[in-house]
Length: 116
Figure 1 (spheres, rainbow, N blue to C red):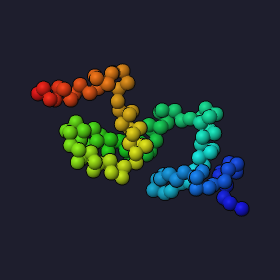
Figure 2 (cartoon, rainbow, N blue to C red):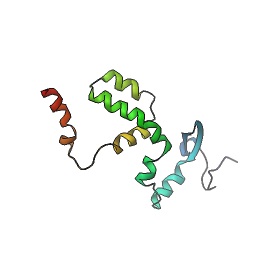
Figure 3 (cartoon, rainbow, N blue to C red):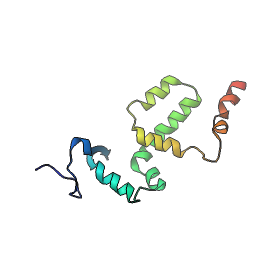
């Protein structure tokens, strides 16, 4: 008999198992249960996602990435994102972007910088 997920409905096969890092330990989660919960409407709110510990830990790196991008330092960006927790870093960076401005407005700093 193979191992089953916490709900007991699914087998924990390699294809159905997602391994996450939480607090320095590995946690195995059932992909099928997660997908089913999202279909039922229990997807976490944006607040819950951005308040997540992984995202909070990614914030200092996200701020450094922003600085390196603004300095146009490719090597620093590459060094900062190497081995990063990509989902958490992506959420942290996206949460820092104002959503009431156009892409042209958000990237205007590049033209201002080159004109200076």
